[in-house]
Amino acid sequence: MESNEYGSGHSESGHSDLLIVGAGIVGLAHAVAAAERGLRVTVLERDERAVGASIRNFGHICLTAQSGRALDYGLAGRQRWIDLAAKAGFWLRECGTVVVARAADEFAVLEEFAERRGGDQVRLLDRAEVAGRLPLLDPATVGGAWLPLDLRVDPRQAVPALAAWLAAEGVRFHWGAQVQQVADGEVISTAGRFTADRVIIAVGHDVDRLAPSAAAEVELRRCLLQMLEVCPDTPVPVDPAVLSGLSMLRYSGLADCTAATAVRQRFQEQRPDLLDLAMNLMYTQRPDGNLVIGDSHAYARTHLPFDEEGTAELIIAEARRLLGTDRLTVRRRWRGVYASSDHTDFLITDLDPATRVVSVTSGIGMTTAFGLAADALTT
Image 1: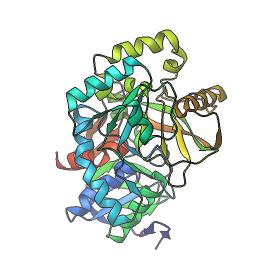
Image 2 (image 1 turned 30 degrees about the vertical axis):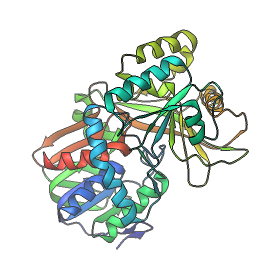
Image 3 (image 1 turned 90 degrees about the horizontal axis):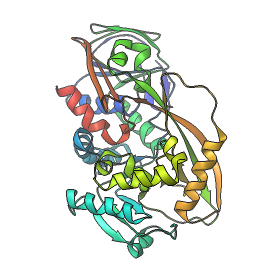
């Protein structure tokens, strides 16, 4: 029998009601949904622990700024996050999000968004109210909005805690198990041969490695981003997640507002360098007080292995402006990678009657995974 910090696995092969390939947040969400239905569940993960996009993110359950199916999935999964934090014992904050407006056109977007969504989802803030929620603030701030439904977790803690809890609940995990072939309910891996009534392939941006036809169907690419963890010289508590005007151009609920056109035009005229990087200027605070800041975005099937230091420098410079302080010490840097498609936010496709590929192709896996998994297992 194999064991590790997440719980026990089994070296023997066997039959399951559901076998999941991939132990990132999307795979774990499927395991949760299946286990709650009383199914026998096995999870195969090629690494010894989750190391991909599921732990490299802001830990921001950013549901309110979404639209369409993403919003539906986010709202459906919100209470699941809260319940699982209590069961699995990981840190979670029901703290909402503050969207900071630093120009009149940005505040116009928030006014339109609030009118569309109503006070349960969006509450406008004047400058003093923003300052009351954010002790570090750009003096240019004119107002903002609070999105009270959004949540925060520490992904570096939440994902392994969730896997450990699932293992204790009877889900079988095989860590360090490279899957080589999946077809018609049979899975061949370095941990042995497995069979299942149903197989879910949830391998994020590596769909093309195991299911190239599914990746080709949506012209899947990898989105490469740069992120940093910084420490202000004077530590202060920042409870909510914080978005900026650039976020209004990225999240569909905000970007779909008519007023967002003026914001984009201003950035095109004044700061095209930020748009060239598809920057989403935002930050969240980790439980230790450090701030996770970012992030840039670049798209390709295969990326060069070199990170441009100028990109990180630009992120830091813009974070300093947003925070209204020059005193930030960089503690960590990393690159994130997630699946991306111009055709859909969610890849859900069947390879055969027993095998389904599920991937979030829009960088919002933490926000949507639980709602997505419930849907993918039902339909």
